Length: 126
Image (cartoon, rainbow, N blue to C red):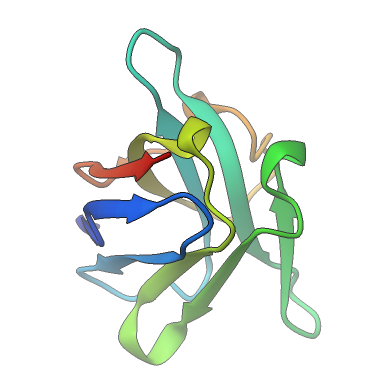
């Protein structure tokens, strides 16, 4: 599986941006995550979307993006999205999408994901 992230850009504080991550193959049974890495910082978990095997997807968010960011996916397009609203300067980072086959694993850990996109830079100006 190859992942291609897009949505790079500059946005003013309070604005919105949508990131996309397209997979080369079918990822219906995959778990997806978005991570970010600011300059000089470690890569950190942002959001995850995981098929629960029953009635749809479960979504998870880091506390610092709750109620501002929304992760979603379009299985027909093999694409995952990260809608970012009310952006703050501290959201400036390179954003990475990641995927892994379903299975017991901690969705918050980078080591849980075997496939990564190339990263896309989002800069939020104050």
